Image (cartoon, rainbow, N blue to C red; front, side):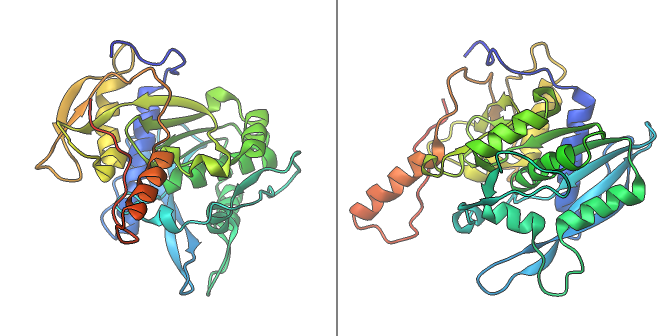
Length: 324
């Protein structure tokens, strides 16, 4: 592997690393840990969302708002995702529902994941306002002149819903989205609407070639990725089987980006301690130029084969891939 993908965009290092730090801070806030704001930013607000489940669900912290201390009027919205439990995607509703913007209209009507949209637009229990309503209330209160939007995993999906909502409802407000390891959000109609209203340079999805989540949901759902793609490639060094969480970790992504973004081209080959388990060693490589594998489809095939052989339902089924 000697070259990065020809279409790899050039990312601004300081902004991208601030986005990654903000995504990590959103996890810390959710877990009740001390929050470290990105460099040159200060935490000013939080918002919640409704996390529904078969037993009813609950209101949970889903994001943080940071104000720039270096540039007046600049705010960073960071959505919390799922960093330590990829099982959430097994139960998420990938059937589609219509995306309706807070203001304005869009044609054709984008069809997006009912699960993601339910978190973004839903309200339950004693919640006073949906996540979407809280976000637009924050826009009214702080009146930003520029907005950055980010998130990791599930948070990356939610950040894309908010970015399109911003583009349609606040078309005069400059915004940029850089998200990490996000699953796909909607089908071809979503892809069309996103591309029509958000310039490619204003939305970038950073992902790990070996990560399972960006290939979700499986191709049978007809989903499509949006925005520019910035590819990295890191995995457990010498792994004989897939290690899903290290591949998906935002902390591991942050380490790779800290090295790669200052290089020309923006890629890094080296080793580092696994941020999910320091006893393991990770290896970052120059990303392959081949198309991103359909890991989710491979997992379905593996699961079907296991069931045909009589393995119990729920037996571990992972994409059959080894580190090169």
